[in-house]
Image (tube, rainbow, N blue to C red; front, side, top):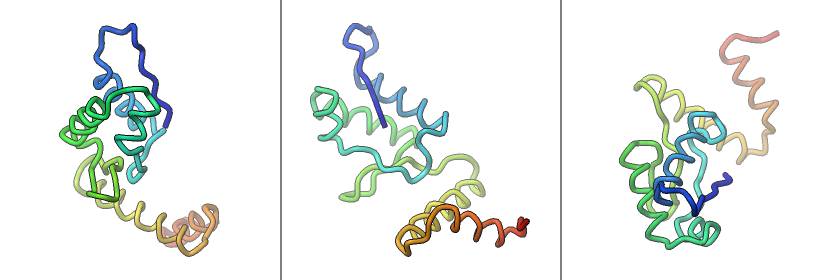
Length: 120
């Protein structure tokens, strides 16, 4: 994730971060389950105070764009209706499990296609 702050903008930095993350989620550059940088790391990268980044993350969490999982960090939240959200969560869980088992993306996708009856 590459965020940039325009120091000349009249939009406050915390809002610039918030809007850029939302844009990245809407465009698909960030998807459900993607981990965001820590508040401290992003503050350092953008040369901002940690409280500025924390304010952005709190606003994103309130908007249900991200979720914070304690010490594990902040992640892009599953979005959409309840059914879609459950499928997203299952997909994230499957992807994490496939990676942990050393299954490459093409093979993992082939397994999903077969499970959905989309072989061929």
